[in-house]
Amino acid sequence: MVRILKLTPAEVEAVKRRMSRIDLGEYLELLGAFALGDWGRVELEGAETERVVKRRLTMAAKERGFKLRYRSVREVDGGIVFRVL
Image (cartoon, rainbow, N blue to C red):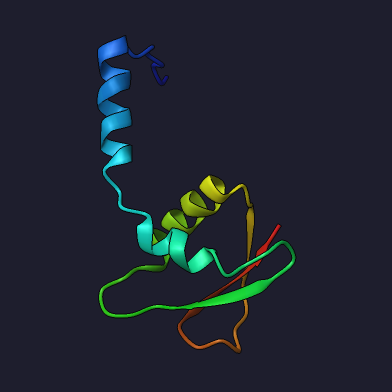
């Protein structure tokens, strides 16, 4: 059986500080060119993983007031396709 524990206020602040360390500036800037209904593609470079890029892109979109829907498209080599909602 799993245990679920309630965090103390100090633990909550520690979690928030760790989450706020991520610099989303690049992602916020890139999303600035998008509007509702637009489609986009992210081309992964270097050691970037799809999981990390999607997470940061989603967080940046949330700050901009958008939601993103990701599509699985096999024709797109090494990229992440998304739609702005």
